[in-house]
Length: 468
Ligand code: NAP
Image (cartoon, rainbow, N blue to C red; front, top):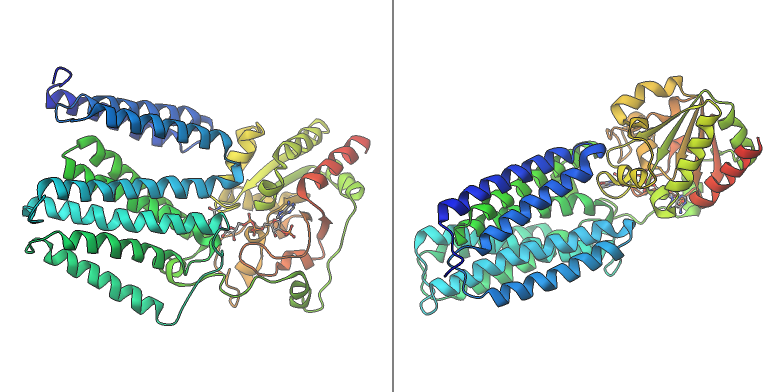
């Protein structure tokens, strides 16, 4: 093979690629360096790919070129066409494909090493088994997550009696299949393992509510990373081992951080069937208010309050993303700043529907990074804030999380919006947010509701501030 490079030269380039991947991930930790971090990591990935292609063991470059061409077209088109609000399901889909690829590698290597007897030497079996099991779970689980987020499947938890016991039994069978693998002649265990793991992935994700999908996707992402790392052992490819381990570690950390931000354990997310009770409807929300009343405000009155404030804190949430109001919010903030108002943005770690959702949206509207404050930094500032302007955020502002031990949100760290002198909430109705829980903030005497689509409401505020 004329292209073949010495293995130690290839391994050296893998180390360079790994360093670039780590540097890239490090730079993702701040909005100001995230774009270049992505680029640096992409270069690392390109180096790993190119030098893998120079490996002397490759049989068919045509097959690989076809795969790369197909993947490039699909990846490029998806990245261009997908709407920002649909990114979580795109991540789920791409993540699932990664897990499926790792499982297929395990199956293909099994067939290559043992075309007849199905008996593979002990060293390779562990990695193959792990890759097939975890990769398949990640593949089918991610497809279900995609279906729930895309609303092809019902978003509510799908549960049946004895489900957890059945899942535990199925998992035990899969482990038993694996345990017999080393000693058994015949390829039936690999087929059984793949089929059982695919079923397990479906059953694992079905009982989880659509709103918990970001956490599940992050967990499945960690699974895919680990499956890819063990596929790296199967193929003896250092780059795949390093890359897979990085994905596994970062997916695990992200899962833990999201759980912490919601004060939910992973067990509660996976087995709690959160959101199994039907979401509260408008009528039910009114009943849940227990005779409490809310106050409405016109855009004109709200604009006067904002214009004459010394400090305004904008609290973005899922509704801002759904309405695509980020550019209008930026325009409003600019207008207020020109009038001498100190404007800040309060970013809750799980506002929206994916980690970093609000940062991405506000960066799209070129909101200056220094105006973005994390929850820990902005909470002490609310008592010194004249107006908290809540744009499509709900659960992340619910004081019940602080005050009501009976609330399912109890213990979740929230933005202490109710400690501002005045609160203006922009949303379309009194309907609850993702958690399906009535928000006490709306009945607070300081709070005024401006009903309507967030984009239309902010547009009205912009016109009214200009006129004020
Ligand atoms: P939220 O609690 O889901 O509330 C969003 C609010 O936006 C709704 O109450 C809705 O009220 C309003 N809304 C929807 N479309 C709108 C539009 N076009 N114009 C104006 N308002 C609109 O959102 P959040 O406060 O951002 O909280 C995020 C939730 O997601 C939390 O419960 C969090 O635990 C969960 N979660 C997030 C992540 C993550 O990674 N970000 C992960 C897992 C779970 P109306 O229908 O009345 O308009």
